[in-house]
Length: 291
Image (cartoon, rainbow, N blue to C red; front, side, top):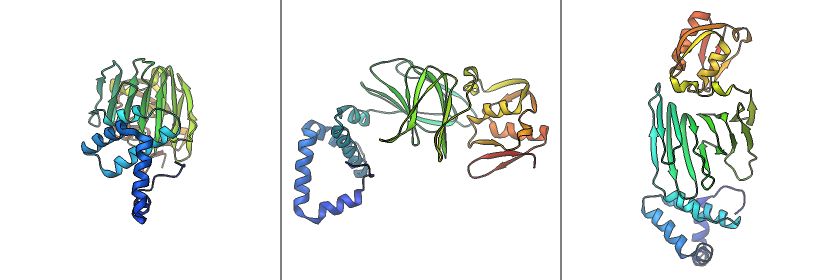
């Protein structure tokens, strides 16, 4: 029940250390969970969940009960039949969910959607989505991406999940963005605001024009003398890794022409020829520099 992660191996060693441990734990489980909860978790286990998942679910429910909340929504979420959606890299897919919420998927995004009577959850494995959320006071809407949790408070927003970071940009309304942990302190973001969660923690980044959020939904954008910095910002969302512009003198280079935002790497290669810069791929970034 403390803040340490659940150690299944240690738990099993404890159970086998003394014959009385199993009976004591079973008695505690029955008193805490009750027959209906035990049956629900048992049904979940029979549907193919591993023993590890079952135990972790049980411990999660215990924590919820210990904190004074009802545990049924958590179990109901685990039992809900998920809906999976994906999009091929380089293309955009638009999905309308059962409640009318609209999702645009890009950057090879893969999502799993689970709706219950109490909440709406979208798990973003990787890629980028733009959500226009249908308001429902009775069922919060949240996006889980890596270690990040984004809760909608009535809005439209973009979530971009990369191997080492999760970025959120708000087009309208308010979202709550934070680390998916018990002791994390989320931040509230309003229209035009953006933030990123990476190895340095959760931090606000430069504001954006709401009209520029998720411009990739149209795949193609025409530029007339736009600064290179703006074009790179548009390409960031669907880039497989963050794009770092190392040389400030390149930021104001004018860019004109029609560009396919769903092909960020290809577009950067084209721009490097026109503007004579180098694009170098590292383990966690695309680095742009003069040499």
